[in-house]
Image 1 (cartoon, rainbow, N blue to C red):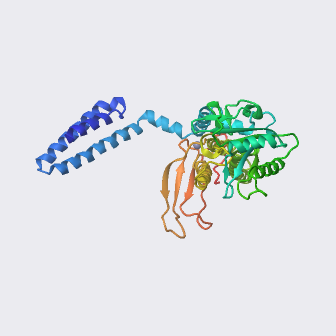
Image 2 (cartoon, rainbow, N blue to C red):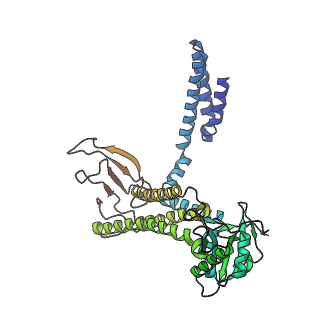
Image 3 (tube, rainbow, N blue to C red):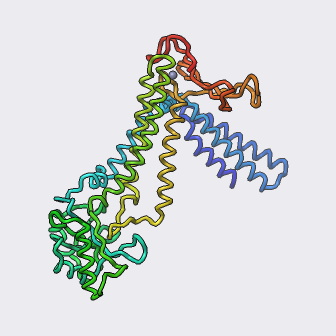
Amino acid sequence: MVLLVSLAAILAASWVVPRPARAGWRRAWVAEIWHYTMLLRDRGLKNRYIRARLWHHSAGALRDAWRIRVNAPGTRRVRAAMRTSAFSLGMIAFCLTAIVVFSRGLAITRSMIAPRYPDARRLVLISESGVLLGQRHAVAPSLLEYWKANNTTLAGLAGYQWDYRGDAWVTPEFFGVLGVRPRRFLLRRIVDWRAADNQRYFGILGRLKPGITPAAAQTELRDLAARYRSYQKPSPFQEAEVMPLLPRIRQPLAGYSFVCALTVGLLLAGAAIGIRADRRRSGRIRTRYWTYYCAKSVALPLALTLVIWEFTRATSITLTGGTTFVAEPIFVWLVILNFGGIVWWCLADQRARCRACLRILQYPVRIGSLGAVLFDHAGTELVCCQGHGSLYVPAVSSDYVQRGGWTGLDLSGAPDAPSEPVRR
Ligand SMILES: [Zn+2]
């Protein structure tokens, strides 16, 4: 039985092997497995042991098939292409395109930058505060009616409610207050707008009268709510909260733009330092090398920021204008980690590339001896396959040991190559 499974595994693995070598490879491995099984049986070994050895042998066949595939001339060309800067930039461009397509043309980002509500500065979200700091509650329909009848600071008030499927229930005045019938409200996609019954607690949308500030409206609504509840003075809890709509929906825009700009700034500062060092050492700037660095330094943080806006809950707002995160600290930590990862990759990738043709350097050779204090320091040397130069990376970084760096070897071919070998 195990023998049959092993033979089937070899048959499957043979499809990984390039076509010209496939038949021969399959014959050789089938014969090998057959011979091995017979040999083990003749020795009178236990079945369990034979089974284990056969599994081991089959895994060896898979490894062998994979090795042949990786070293095939066609695959080698693909791998060589993957080492170029064009491949990296192409992948980044592909990711950006995918983000734009899957987010329906950056729908959330566009609604944050320019929401399509007429005179949006006058729109406010109204809720009631809870016992805990920052807690907000939806408002009872009867209180909404009382506010509608008695307020003097708002041109219109409407209630809304939604569920996770994208259905929304709104009071009849809702579209009049908002000014349009949008596809998105508070960055949330609304599939179906329905008329609300009066049984629900609402999030409230208001439109301020011209010249009225949200603070003035808040004071009035608090007084009205107190009167409605027949209290002598406003309660410390359950106070009306009025929040301007525009700053609320732009909150994620500002926050993550700042982190993105910080990351890009940090990376570009690195480029500025590198370019200055270039000019000091050789009097010329490796334009292609630094253009590639700047392109990925801008594109990658931008791509991550767009992913955060379009596909995470960072832009998800609750009914009362709060944040929906239950694990916000973890998310912020992940964001920091990801931006840190981008900075690390940009620097590491740049360092491992040829200064002339931007291909990833290859054939690492370990030189020197570990632990040598005076001479023969340990390090690794990598070379460009096109013969443009080599990079020395010391194992220990210190002022005392020999400093790492690039040695240009090409004397004429590359556009940015120095006129003579120069240690950089
Ligand atoms: Zn090169």
